[in-house]
Image (cartoon, rainbow, N blue to C red):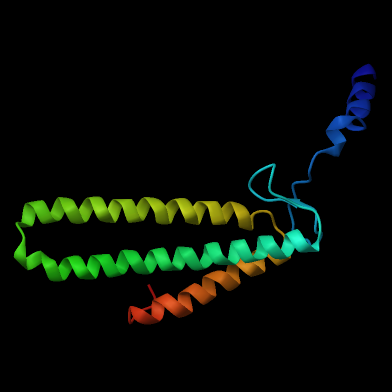
Length: 142
């Protein structure tokens, strides 16, 4: 009985004032995105956050395009260089692109997991714009 009492009084103290972690889609404007200091508390900060998230989605698609373009350029230059040296150069550059692409993708996955409808839609919209702009240059859908 005493343990139950202690648990209930703890929840009414400072612990109850923490930011919520949503487990479902919502349209409330009060959210924390990625960091404690990135707090959405009104419509203005939500609009700003949506623009930043959409820009990050466009950046991810631009990074995918840059990786593809670099690979294509290196294939053309491959004939003039020693194959062993060229392999390591291509492999290191491709690994760096892979690292940055993966890092940004996982960050955006965590942003999506805020489960704010506005943030999720802006991320999808940014990825779609980036795909429209950059994937059309590759001749494929990456």
